[in-house]
Image (cartoon, rainbow, N blue to C red; front, side, top):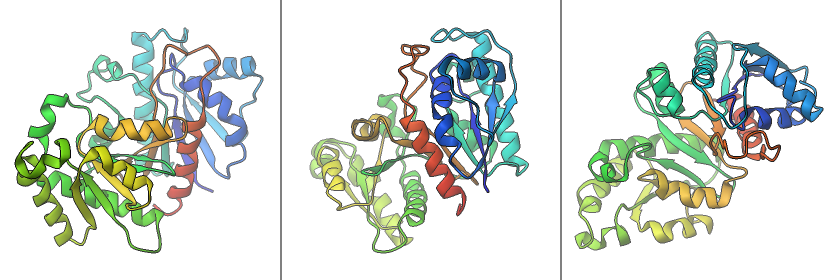
Length: 311
C-alpha cells in the first residue's frame, strides 16, 4: 500500500474545503495518506460538512490558527510553507512516495523569505534535480511548459535550445509511462504567429526552436514542429499528437484550462517522486462559501496513486 502526502496549502483558501469534501473518495483508495496541515481547523470543517476524517488519513498537525476563509494573513502564509517543508522532509526520509499539494499563494514564498514563486521551483531546488518541467495532465490534452512564471516580455530571451530539448526529454519519459504501446509523437509550439512564417514574423523559430527539434531527434526524442500554436491544439485533440510542449505559461494553459479546469492535474516532471496538484489556485473569492469543486484535486490524487506504483 503506497504512502502519499498531502499538504493543506493556504488554509485561508479553498484547499481545506476541497480536502474535506474529498474524504469519502480518499477513504476508498488503497493508500495511506499523511496530511500536513492544521488538525483543529480540519476537524471544525469536518463537523460543518458532516464528513468524518477517514481512517486511512493521518493528520500531521503543524499549526493551530484562527482562520477566516478568504482572508490570508502572514500566519497563514508562513503555515502553508511550513506544511510543504515538512512534507519534503518526509519524502527525503522515504516515508512517503508521492505528494499532492493544495494551492499556495505565491506571496507566501516572499513572506517566508524564499526566492521562489511556486511549488515547482522550490521542489526542484530541494531535490537538486538537474532539470525539471511544469506539466499538466488531462484525458484530452497533456502539455509541458518551457518557461513558467516569468513576464511575457522575458520569454523570447529565455528560450534556449538546450532547455527546450530537456523539457522534451522529460515529457517523453512521462508519456512512456502513460502509453505502453504504439508510436509517440510530441508537438512543439512556435513562439510567433504562424510559427514565424519563415522568419517574416520573428526569428526565434529559425534560430532557437528548430535547432532544438533537431537536437531532440538526435537523442531519439520524437519531437515535431514548431507548429503555429493557434491550430496545434486542435490537431492534438484530433489525436495527431500525444503531447504538446508550449513555450510560455498562457500559451499552454489557456487551451488546457478551457478543457480541464475541473479535472486537470498539474505535475512536476524530473523529481524523484510523483508530485501533483490541482490546476486552480487559492480562490479566496469563494473560500468558505461551500461551493469549491474538488474535481481537480481528486484527479491529482488518482494520478499520484497510479503513477507512484511505477515511478
